[in-house]
Structures are given as C-alpha cells and as structure tokens.
Length: 463
Image 1 (cartoon, rainbow, N blue to C red):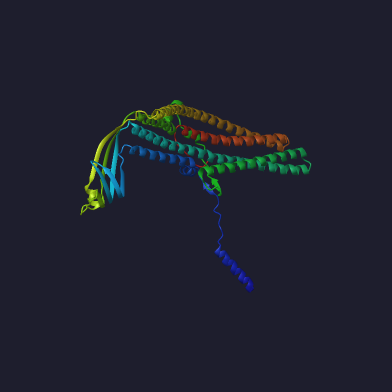
Image 2: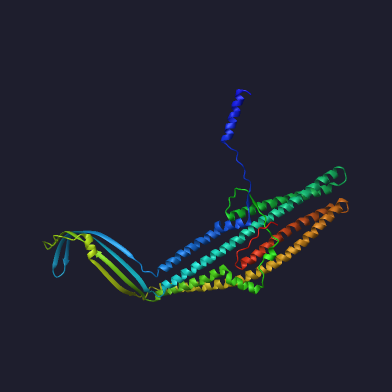
C-alpha cells in the first residue's frame, strides 16, 4: 500500500473515531395506561382545572382572613421652618425650626357587617369545593378521551391489516388473471374488472393508513408527546369488556351516579356559593360595627422656637428615640356606620346575586337530569353494542364462509369473477364491522363507568 493510501486510511479512521454513528433507537412503545397517566398530568384540560382549583383555594384563604383584624403601620419624618401666625387667647407669632419622627399602628376588627364577610366566606368555600370536583371530573373526562383516542388508533391498525390482506389477495388474483388472459383462458373483461378492484382496494388501504396517521397525531397532541418521533401502540385486551361493565338495574345505578358524579357535586357547591354571595350582597342593608385600636407617638427636636420674640427652646432636649418611647398615645373605640342611601348600589348587587342563585339552582336541576340521562343512555348503548358485536361476529362468519365457497367455485369456473369480488368486498366490510364492534363494546363499558362518576378501568392484557 502506498504512503498516500495509508494517509487516507488513517484520516478516515480518525474521522470515524471523532464522529460516531447515530443509532436509531426505533419507535417508542406506548401503552394505554402510560398514555392515560401522562394525560392526567400534562393535558391542557387538567392543567386548566388545576389552575382554577389553585385560584379558588387562594380566594378561600382570603375569605378566612376577613374574620381577622387588619393591621396598618405608618411612619413620618418632617421638618418645619418659617413663621406661623397662631391665634389662641391672643395672636402669637411663632418662628420655629424643628424636625421629628412619628409613627402610628392601627388595627380594626369588624364585629358585624350584616354577615357580609360570612357570606363571602361561604361563597369562596363553595367555589373551592366546586373547583375540586371539576378537577376530578376533568381527570375522568381526559382519561375517557385518551382511551377513545388510543383505541381508535388500534381500530385503524386492524382495518389496515384487513386492507393489506385484501389488497394482497386482489394483486395475486390480478397476476393470475393476467397470465390466464395471455394464454387465452380468461377474457379481458375479467382482467379489467379485477384491475379496477385492485385499484379500489389500494385506495381503501391508502385512506386507512392516512386515517391512522391523523388519529395517532390527535392522540399524541392530547398527550403532549413529541410529534416528530415514531411510536407503536401496545394492544389492549378487549374480550372482558362485557364482564367488566358495571352491573345493576338502571335505578340503582342512577342513584349511585347521583351520589358520586363530581360534576353534579360541583353544580351543588355552586348553588351554595351563590347563596353565600347573596348573603354577602345583602350585608350592605345592615349597619357595620368595627372595633378600632390605635397606638401613635411623635418626637421633635427644636433648633429655634421663638414665640412673639421669646426663645422657648429648652436647654436640654430629649433624644427623639426617647420621646418616641415616652410619648405614646392609645386609642380604643367602637365605630358604627350605617349607609342609609347608597344610590341603590346594594339593592342592585342583591338583585344580581339573587338571580345568580336562581340560575345556579336551575343548572343543578338540569345536571341531575343529565346524570340520569347519561346512565340510562350508557346502559342502553352498552346493550346495543353487545348485540351489535354478536351480529358482527355472525356476519363475519357468514362472510368468510361465503368468500371461501365463492372462491372455490370460481377456481373451477362454477362462479363468476363478479360474484367473487362481491364476496371479497363483503368480507372486508364484515371484518371492519367486527373490529369496530369489539372496540365499541369496550368503550361502552368505559362509558358506563364515566356516567357513574368513576375513572375508566383499564386492562392491558394482550388479546
């Protein structure tokens, strides 16, 4: 080997050592439980509900604080220079230059304000409890949404598998027909018909793959995964959907939902919050009684203090710090205030609060009816989904037998190509309907749990 070749080899080896090859880690495997867990932590609806809960907690803390006395502090430093004409028993001309500090501490404890603070506290407490219940319901809703989105991608995968098998069968038959047409065993119409069917099957598969891509992107967006990565989904056990569904008659399940549904509980707490707000708004009709306390002190040092030409500055003045500690004044008193006419502002606030309470009661009653509707509808949909699965299973069995029988007859020229293509299309439709029915039954079982106020239970046992 020449010296130039050795140099090139060494340079290539050195470059390879400095830039290691990037190994593709492959697609990320997602499971249903992992997707739900991540969504419960990172999804936008849950985070918005958590923000609302924190805001309600802060408002409740402020409501507690209304029962405590306030505390205010103020301080002052001042300098006075110049002439002042003061009149008491006789006019006085004061020429003074002085400086000093003063401070004041004051506190007020409300003794009675028409239960306004109590009503505000009850309103804040109801809003906090409503926010907690709304957060719980948001978690249940996002869990159900993720289950639906995840299983939609699984359904797309099954339909793609059926579509690939269907297209492979059409392509194989088209190849055979091409050969038979070349030797004169089959006519061109059959070949053209099969070519048209193959194109339709290819278009069906393209649509199925496109839908799978879009549904996967929707799932990743809900879960806030990196959309630029590759993912594969673990299969979910579906066969136990009927056994896992909540059991019981409609009345008993409705009573359970009325006691457990977080959104209904939130609506009830909003009624209590609106009642508290009405009590607070009506507080302006009553007098307000406050207990006040004040501590104040002032200090001053005089440089000059001439009164009618006579200097009254003491020879020895106490330091300002000593004065602040010595000259302290305390004031304690009770103040009663009653607004007799505030241009109907309190009246208007009370009317608005009363209307808000009536609206909250209407929403609560509507929420109760919605709970009963959700339970009965979920039970009915589950029964229909179970019947639909049995019908789809029977239809798939019949379509499979029809396709096999028609294919056997076609191979011995006892049936036409049109009959075979019709049976093949019916088989594909039955396969898709069966896959959709299996997933639909699983989702309807989860829908019953959601209607009852439960977090959907998950089973990731492989099918």
